[in-house]
Length: 130
Image (tube, rainbow, N blue to C red; front, side, top):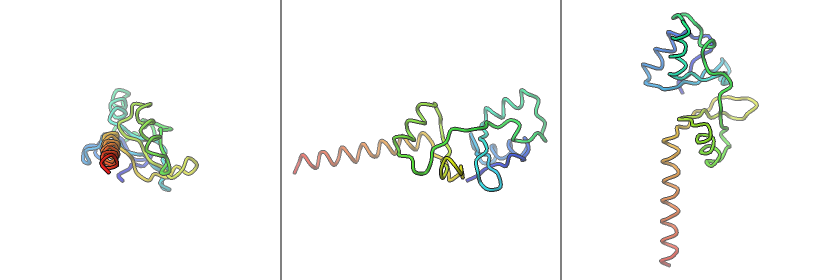
């Protein structure tokens, strides 16, 4: 998982998002605890606000990001993505520690749901044919 440190610079953040072709990045401390997220929109806002190449990520990142835990159900994850109109969401170990485990993208979640529906429909057809 590619991430940024709150003390990384604006220049580092722009290079990371660009070189890795990312729309977002988790901002974590040295313990891998999420402190915020950085999106391309945050970058644009930072430019408008007059950030310099040396401005720290902590000054323009989104703090208190919406997260899900690794124990949340697919239903909760899908609802959270939908309710907050998110394209992706960080996954943490729990809401106390907030250690980043990864992220889930909305398009991958939709594909997962479609696969489950397909599996359910096939099982129904097989059960009816028995």
